[in-house]
Image: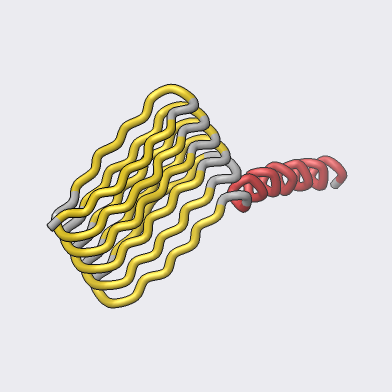
Length: 144
């Protein structure tokens, strides 16, 4: 009986540790309108994803691999697309898009990188890729 109790206790302890790590991650999604979609994944600890979409047919995706990463996407309008990929630790990336048919792809592979951007208008497109550590990129685009 004691052996079964020890094994059960060990299994519960292992599951608790795994569950606690997953609970460190945060995901906040707000969507208004119709046809909006969001998705992504988090592997690691202390990662945060925030998505805000107001309008129709907007799509936001964020994938995080590592620890302490923050990704944010705010979109208002029609048919906007945002994709954020983070591999490493303590990266921060965020974009705000206002208008129609705007696209952004933000990619970080390393540690302590920062990307911040704003796109206003119709048909803006941004593709930012950071490799290494300590990179900082900021962009603002106004499109017709």
